[in-house]
Amino acid sequence: MGGYRGTPSPWQRKLSSAHCWVNRNAADKGSALDYVRADLTEPAPPRRRRRAFDWSTLIIAAVALVAAATVYVRDGWRHFLAIFSGDLMLFGEMLPKVLAGCLIGAFVTLLLPRELVARWVGQESGFTGLLIAAFFGFLLPGGPITIYPVAGAFLTMGADAGAVVSFITSWTLCGYTRALVWELPFFGPHFVIWRIVEAVPLPIIAGLLARGVVRARLARTDIAK
Amino acid sequence: MTLAVNILLWLVVCVLAVIAAYRGRVLLNNGARDGVVEFIRLLPRIGAGVIGAGFIAKALPNEWIAPWLGPQSGFLGVAIATLGGALTPGGPVVGFSIGAAALKTGAGAPQVIAYSTAWALYALHRLVIWEVPLMPPRVVWLRAAVSVPLPFIAAALAMALSQP
Image 1 (cartoon, chains in turn orange, cyan):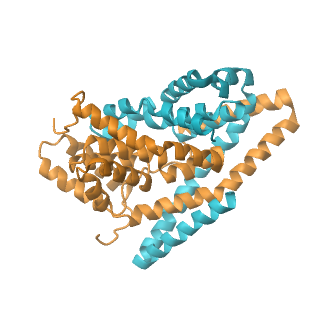
Image 2: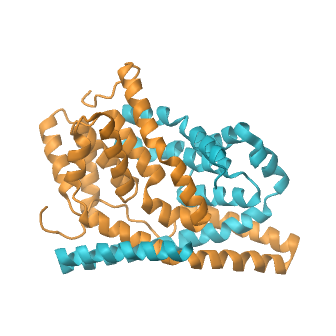
Image 3: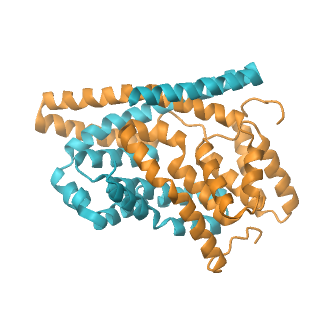
């Protein structure tokens, strides 16, 4: 792994995701592969810069305000205060976990050599390949802007559709950063842990189904065309 | 339980920080800074959602949610929740706020699991906005198609285990 080059500027980020897109369409597979390798060894992958507030937060905040007003008018001040203080406590209790989740995500992003991930998942490796892909899906932090280019790179490097489907499904359902940062404050540890336990078989099932569909020639996944 | 989760998480943070420090001080600083910046950015979104979910749950009429999505609603409830998950637009704040509010209002845990699984796997807006531009479209639609039964499997497991 090369030396750490610092977090790329927003401009570089935009450029690198643009490259990903162009390479997908490029006929020259060799150079696409070179680019993908370079992208995977990049210590700090492109990250979507989040603004503190976005439109979906605004909508939820607006709905919450209407709901809070309804509760206040209908049930009175005491009910309003009980709900508010209860949720505030819940929120406060979760903050250390959310911070820990953010830090774990940031460190794993910087420390995990992405080319290693790609080498493991890139092999046509039967059932074990699905397990490895699912494990890396669990392990890799980051949002959609990081995960989908990595998954696209796996395909370019020869991973089959089943492994890629397993990887994305596992990242979506079992990924710890998402669970820690997002799900835990809303649902609490008991619910989240059981939901994840019940999601463990799903990436494998999805991967096997995807392989079945491809083998039955119901779908083609060759990306060069 | 909460304390144990906290201790475990911060232990992991410490181990990762030590590994990062061993590889170089810049790496340690960058990791810590990235993590804290992400945390500060997330605070208002999670705050609005978590505090909002309580009020939304209280304002929603219980007599709507329970018959359609309650524990007694069975697989019809799971199917409704799955469809709702696929059609929910917006980021994680929206999906998780709705799920948490429904759970507080009397929806069953398997139904809420089906909702959040469907929303996470194939919310239509996310497929179109995020996945199709970054991945070969054929693989995206293949993934979405094979994901259709997954919320039902997750809900069936939740019913079989009677947890959460």
